[in-house]
Image: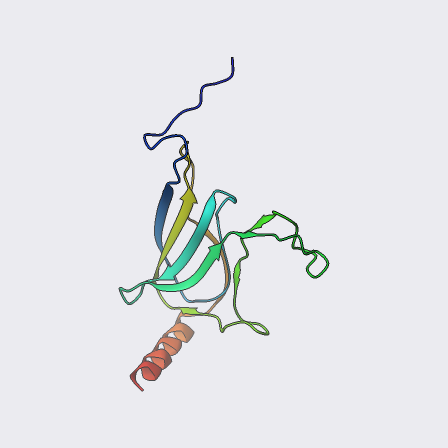
Length: 151
């Protein structure tokens, strides 16, 4: 006999969203790459915030992107392929790298589709690359940012 389907308390077609948050800090880096750990297609999106002012500031948001099948114009646009493009900074056509000074508080918010069965072992972590700076250079950058903020 086939296994019985587990039903959630919301019924067989629950379109619930499961949200996970994660908090940590980063020291003295200019961020150039961020890719959230989010499994498609259950992943709706994952967002990365800096929170050094008490009001989270969005640095990166990855949302699922479904291919349209236009491989003639874009060889990576496979029909129905699910991708989660990373966030990139510092390069031609890209925004400047965000500076993350000493002990910059970070917050990650991940939203998953959670239909019928729970998602166990989920996380809201990020793979990131940045350019590190020595502590004295970080202090100079922080002072310069403070002067710019006051003007």
